[in-house]
Length: 116
Image 1: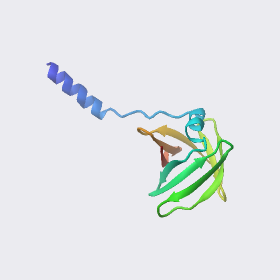
Image 2: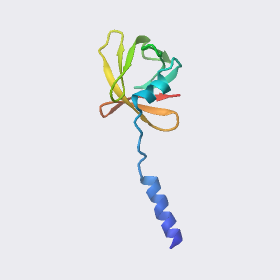
Image 3: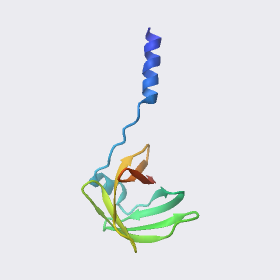
Image 4: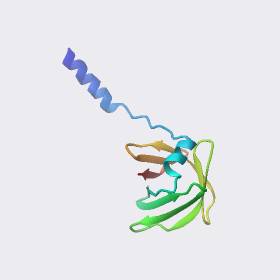
């Protein structure tokens, strides 16, 4: 009986989804918007991203593809918004996605993964 219970609990643990935690705007700022570089991956392109405390940001590609750019960021009620040079503003939420890994979400769509 005890072995069966352990097997059932192990099976449940393996199939139970991990609930991603949403980062608050303050957590986003203190984790990422510090002037220190981190990596963003989107559509098979990797970028080195730097979000400065003064509201400015830059990105440069790591490897092939993508383009270098700069812009501005600001915190929003649920996350943050960015405006890249020559583009319209977009707002996002950030969710934990593992150890030192976060999913950048626009609505219900994951648009990038950030890692540190």
